[in-house]
Figure (spheres, helix red, strand yellow):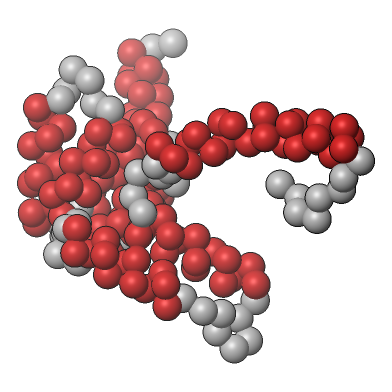
Length: 170
């Protein structure tokens, strides 16, 4: 292949990669960090992208103080850019405890709207719960999830040994 053909092929490959990245960036709403709810939504949208595109799309869609804070963190962690650490840094920088408390109140008030499908309500409820309680499960929840199979097995053994049938299913 001649040199000009190789350069042309390289050019088209770069153009295709750039177009793919811009298509990914279009899926994410811009965010300047002013509203805690929009910060959380921004990070949720970034998490839908492939891991290798997240920082590049962040660079394209973040604005103002959000962009400056994120880029400072990225420059300081170029040797080990961990997505979860980056996300945690942004949440700590732009989402206060008061905002999380307000989300918990929103979650408590969350009810199914007239005409709303159960699936839609469930999605909305889960998003509010995720916003209200960052970081996933706490230690007690991890213990319950870890011990539940043992509890179920023990309950089944007790039922068989005593001829009792419980009314609750775990």
